[in-house]
Image (cartoon, rainbow, N blue to C red; front, side):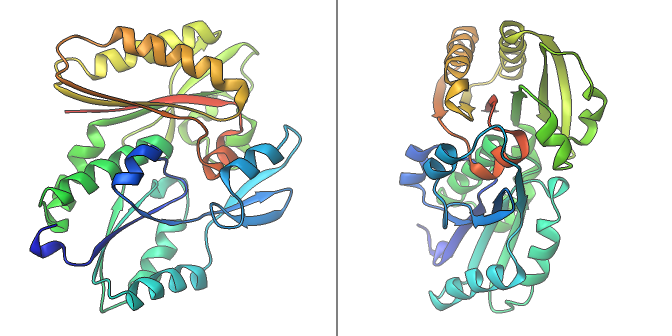
Length: 293
């Protein structure tokens, strides 16, 4: 760590997914969102673990999320202050998906003795995680938080998330369907491929008939995205165990479609994506994220 990195801490939230093996080397502090299972609320990662959440939920459960209270955000930052933290890089999921960042800005603004740099990833889940990973690595290599702010837009453009769900009811119910609302009422067997667009909203990428075509469509999108790129990072992810086989098929197809011109390739598997994300998408979700430069 360089001299200007004396006490800077990276903070993120439970709507962002990071590969476990990466977090072991680059720890982040997590603010847990509130997840509601049939109107009983828990703090993601604090009162309920990923495993407990997945073991507990069924298709009949009513899943919701809420963001932490002002008091909870305050006490989180108060702890950082007590540790002597002077600078924070706060990397969070898209502001367009929740009112969280509005409240958050007001709260952290009260901590005048701390410099908090807020980075809106304009993404979620593994997409947001990939933006956070790159910011953290650049910081560790000596790039200042001010410079990272200037590079954020470029990092966001180099990141893409694609995902598919077996039902749109969760996205619709939680008001997260964004620009993909036109897909509602679609026929069965139609799988939307969704993305989070450059504005940070859920949007339709394409619509496919059947899982095979959905995987092929995602694979082709990734292949195009990494064309002429030298360094590529990819992660596949899934919700419930029902999605495991589909995720493995997606991983194989993507791996075999990648051009040989890539000099450095990192491949991750996020076996169960965050409960916060699942409350929005529903448990039957799978997807892939890519970062390329």
